Length: 145
Image 1 (cartoon, rainbow, N blue to C red):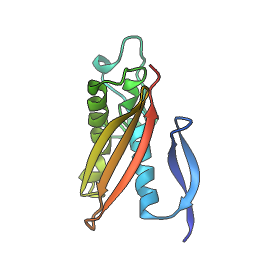
Image 2 (tube, helix red, strand yellow):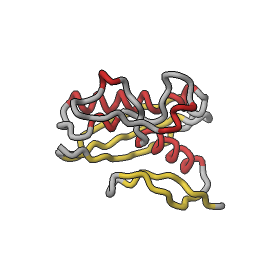
Image 3 (spheres, helix red, strand yellow):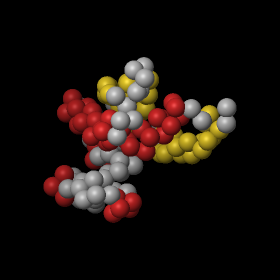
Image 4 (cartoon, rainbow, N blue to C red):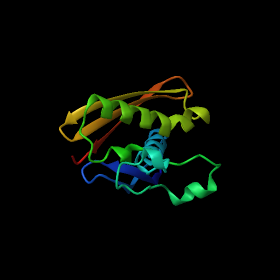
């Protein structure tokens, strides 16, 4: 099986990285999810925390009005990890990955978010592939309080 350059989430260094991986459906799914979760989506100005500047992917200008690639997880930086933070993270992940269901790339995604430490959340995405099987993807992110 051939290798491709995949975009992966490096949870130790808290960044997206590029690494060779086998050219499999799992590699492609993991890459799509990493891009969807860890690319900063633009937000409405009323969603911005005080003193924070809006972020967003420059390529959004080529998307239809109101659409943005990525997620709003960046809004949770420096947040205390509370039940509200966990719920927001789940909502942001749901919103960021909905395109895979809308585009018929997946049948369903079940999302679990849990606290791993004082400053770390773990995301588990159970993805139902078009053949009906389920694939589990787990990613972690640290939030500096």
